[in-house]
Image (tube, rainbow, N blue to C red; front, side, top):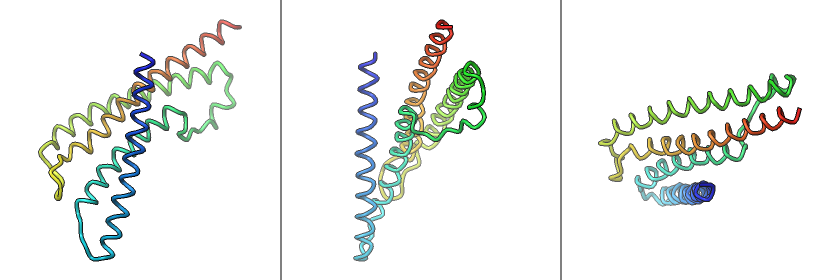
Amino acid sequence: MKKLYRLLCKAEVIVCGTGFIFLVAFVFMSAILRFFRVSMAWNIDIAMLLLAWTAFLGADIAWRSGQLVGIDLVTRNLPRFLQKIVEILLYVIIFCALILIVGSGIKLAVAERLRTYQSIPVPYSMVTLSLVAAALSMLLSTILKIRRAIIRFNEKEAAK
């Protein structure tokens, strides 16, 4: 199971990095071509699609590695016991929010399955599915964070 999760994480980083490189390339190519008065609307549509996928997958990568901004102004002065309780509680709230995002994202993707981009025959639901895919991956990361927090909590309580 751990091997599969590591493989998923590596694949996510590769897809996100590759998508970002292509995103920059398409936007740069569009700007250069616009300078020569050549319009290629499909460049921007593909760039928007890549932006959604790289942004949401990048959010999961940041979440998993602990690189998101956190504010500990309130919790830093609490006792360690309460800090751990608040940490686990916040993870559970994030878990519930991600479940709502997945459910709403699936409904939206189904509703937008017939709508396509103007210049490419790709359904607009592909953008919405980026949110669903990233939220599912974040759900898995959050479950592991909750598990680790509970294990650390139990170890420190047993040590007392």
